[in-house]
Image (cartoon, rainbow over all chains, first blue to last red):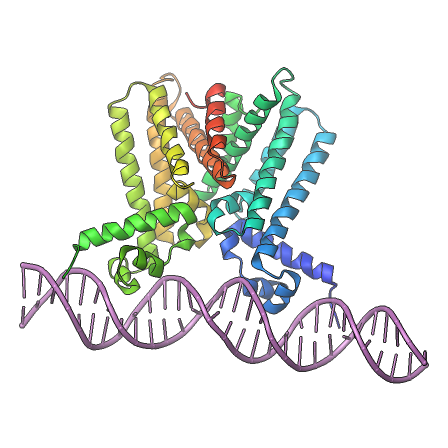
Length: 191
Length: 191
DNA sequence: CCTTATCTGTCTATCGATAGATAGATTACG
DNA sequence: CGTAATCTATCTATCGATAGACAGATAAGG
C-alpha cells in the first residue's frame, strides 16, 4: 500500500530539508537523516532527488518562488511603502523567532564554496528577486531617483536585513534584530 | 630533525585553519586536510588541538584578539570618526577581495547549530568587541546621545556591514559590498 | 475479463571516501 | 635519560551514491 503519492513524498522531503538547512545549513543536510524524518530510506530520497545538488537547488528555487508570491501579494494589497517594509522585515524576524532559523539563501551564501553550481545559481536568483521587489517599493517613495540609485538602495536594505538576522542569530538574541531594524529606520535606510 | 618549534607549528596550523574557515566555514575544517597543508599528519594536529572545538575556539579567540589590537591602534592614531569608519569597512572589504573570504565569526554565526559551546562563546565575544569599538567611534560624533543609543547604533552598523559582506560574497561580486557601504553612508547609518 | 508487460516507489545491502579521535611506537632535543 | 613532538596504524561513524530485488498499481492486447 502506498501511503502517499509521489508529489506528497517530494513535498515531505523538501519540507524537512528546508527546516534543516535554515537551522544548520546545506552541509548539514543528510540523506539518511532526512529519510528518517519522513519515514523512508535514504535510497528512496535519492529516487526523488538524484543528487544532493538537485535537492539543494529545488529547495532554493521553491524558497524563491514562495517568497516572490508572498511579496507580490503584499505589493498588490499594499497600504504604502512603510507598511510593505514592516511586513518585509517581519518575514526575516519570524525565521529567527521560529527556532533561531535563518533565511535559506542567506545561510547558503555563507557556505558558498561548498555549493554545487546549480545551487549557487538559485541563491543568486533569490537575492535578485528580493532586490527587484524592494526596488519597486522604494520607487513608491522616491519617484525622482534613478532606477540605478533605487536598485542600489534596495540592495543595501536587503544586505542590512540579512546581516541583522545573521548577527542576531549568532548571538541567539532576537532583540538584536529588532534594534538593528529600528536603527535602519531611524537613519532612513529603510523607509 | 625538528623543523619548527611547537609554537611555530601551532601558528602554522592556525593560519591554515583560519583561511579554510573564512573560505568554507567551520564544518569544512578537516584535520587531515589541515595536516597535509602544513606538512604533518592529522594525529599531530590533534596533539596541538585535542579536539576540533579546541581549534575552532582558539581560532575565534585569536581572530578577536588581533581585530581588537588593530582597532585599538586605529582609534589611537585616529584622524576622526569618518576616517575610522573608512578603515573599518576596509577590513571587511579586504576579506572579500582576498579570495572571496568572509569574516570568520560571521561565517561561524551561520553555522551556529553545528558549533561546540566553546566556539559559540568566542563568536559572541567577537561581536561584543566590534560593537564596543564602534560605540567608542560613534561617541566621537554624537556626544549627546545616551550610551544605550550609541550601542544600538553600533550594533546596527556591525550587522549591516556583516550583511553586505555576506550578500556580496553570495553573489561573488565585491561591487555589491562597495555600493551597500556607500548607501549606508548616504543615509547616515555609517558616519 | 484475464493475462502479460511496464511503471512506480521503496526496500536491503553495499560501495568508496572521509570524518574526528585514539593508542602506542618512534624520533629528536636538551 | 627524559620529555616533547611526530609518527603509523587503526577505530567507529557517517557521508553521498548505486545496484538489484520486490510489491503494488496501471495499462495493453487478446
